Amino acid sequence: MAEVLVYVDHVDGAVRKPTLELLTLARRVGEPVAVALGNGAADTAAALAEHGAVKVLTHDAAEYADYLVVPKVDALQAAVEAVSAGGSLAAVLVPSSAEGKEIAARLALRIGSGIITDAVDLEAGDEGPVATQSVFAAAYSTKSRVSKGTPVITVKPNSAAVEAAPAAGAVEALSVTFSAAATGTKVTSRTPRESTGRPELTEAAIVVSGGRGVNGAENFAIIEALADSLGAAVGASRAAVDAGWYPHTNQVGQTGKSVSPQLYIASGISGAIQHRAGMQTSKTIVAVNKDAEAPIFDLVDYGVVGDLFDVVPQLTEEIKARKG
Image 1 (cartoon, one colour):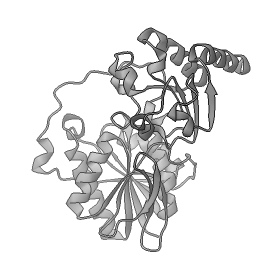
Image 2: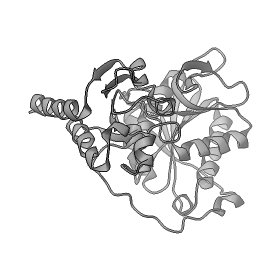
Image 3: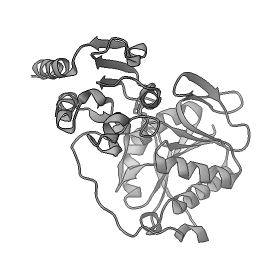
């Protein structure tokens, strides 16, 4: 069976959920071979093996932390060449983060292959993996495959359920020679992001978002309370972000982040196309808006016509009561 390279997104050896989702998808089209780079790379092996990685290629060097993107591209190119030389390579899968898409694009260019970004599903095809994408602000779904070279595919978080499938997970050292471009852009400083204790927005299974109807930064406490009762991430519409009510890092939409959670709750959000483009692939959508004609209601699975300042606190209390 052909092998599938999976780029591992991890923090000091702790594997992030999107990578485990990629392993689930990779098993549909071949045997997953994980590529873990940087500090703690070897520590990822147990989690990766538990979720289907037959091999884990590891490499650690200061360049991964000290420089941007290119050292990782060098390493993935080395992995592609190593696997291709020893057998058949079906695809390279990368998480669809901002960095992941840059890595994938650079890799595809280097190895002369086609690229598909922001896939939401993957299946085996007679002529190679077939990726499903949600396009034109999620108004249509398309199925595509790469017709030249080894497919390089980035996959959105929450596109597949994480499934355990124990495999050998044999750890092998990857030989990497860094290119001259690897040290072109140096990281000069880092500022740790303050933790809110909530899930990462793009990876969360539940997202609660507020929009113009929240009517002020101080009122986002209502949205946060609902999110915390559900163990959810907090999002915001562009209108709320532009007004300075919530940080840009939490913006959901075409010019913000794209999310695809199991449950998306939109409160005080009208449903403009800019926002819909970032959340329309959510599995279940609930909206609370006092305007019965708001466009968001054309999209939802469940809608509540009412004042969010009445509805959302009652919902929060009901959830707490049921959990208690």
